[in-house]
Length: 465
Ligand code: PEP
Ligand code: CO
Image (cartoon, rainbow, N blue to C red; front, side, top):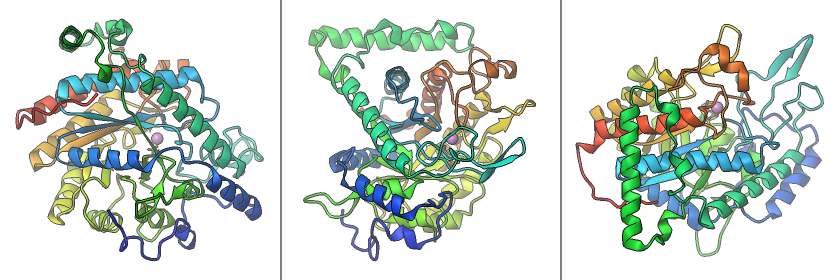
């Protein structure tokens, strides 16, 4: 779709004339220019066809005919760009999506928070370490985590390393998912659920898994085990487009299509702290063809969000904007209905997604940043119920999770308590659901979907693997 109006006076670099938040100045202007030009000359990480395919999927999700499962680390790190980490991340995302596909009976679109999720907004620009006041860590794409004045300076060469690590991650993800085998649902270890034995929903989970196994057997029996769609899956990438040098250097024109594509990721999103209308981030986002995520949580004015959506999506394309609400369990009942009402009465098409993580972070008595599994679940439940009541669809969930056995969020089937958080607390930024908590969340999302939406309609849609 042409965006001539939308892109009037816009270039991939026009954001530079707007006030920019959350992105520190690079001290050496020449060096950032040099790196920018180099990054601009590199091949793209993804293609415009993939971007357009995701937009089609988003159009379906806006009508409740697909569900977008978005998940991954809060902050990817350069050192974690390794085989075990990528394999585990992919495994948990695939398993969650298989549970959802089976239960929701609509296509499930997988979007990883990976291959570029290296830049972080922070609530404070400095951090106290002993007597020192250091610049805060802003993600590996900007500076280093180590508590050292020098390492905490913004370093342009990190843009090139970010590109390389994203390319390696994506290459491995594509090899695992397209080569066949990895996504093979028959592997019994995909379905080990012993860890849930003490959970009150265990019987229900076990029944779901049995039914998935039966469905697989049936498909095998009619296709002699060779049905390729059961062995190949598609996975999209996403990241917060915060370091605009990185995203704009990879924003390109492609042959035979009008407009500019961010070819570093399929679904860039605008963070809750950088969505002010006259700011640099919104200026950048208004000009690209990609579908875009917009985080919305307190503080916000519904009118401003309506103006923002109109600015990002003047043609009101239903596949363009995904509003990712992150209200917090305590605020959702008060704030979500008001936002839905404003968007509905302005006649705007959006995909509604819920991020139940970012409004539910708190510190333990010992000062460890955590989230409670029950708060996360409750916010998701309420989001389903509110959308159902207001006649809109919750078309996606956005979760911070890992395939590793970390101890960062309290609660879940195993009842992880605050004393255990130190055992394997690894995140550089926000606390993530671990492997078991993530799978449990997928089962619970499926329950909510069934309770809220499936009675209303039956599509007979063929679930997309
Ligand atoms: C995030 O998704 O990691 C994040 C910082 O979110 P938000 O912009 O919603 O705070
Ligand atoms: Co986060």
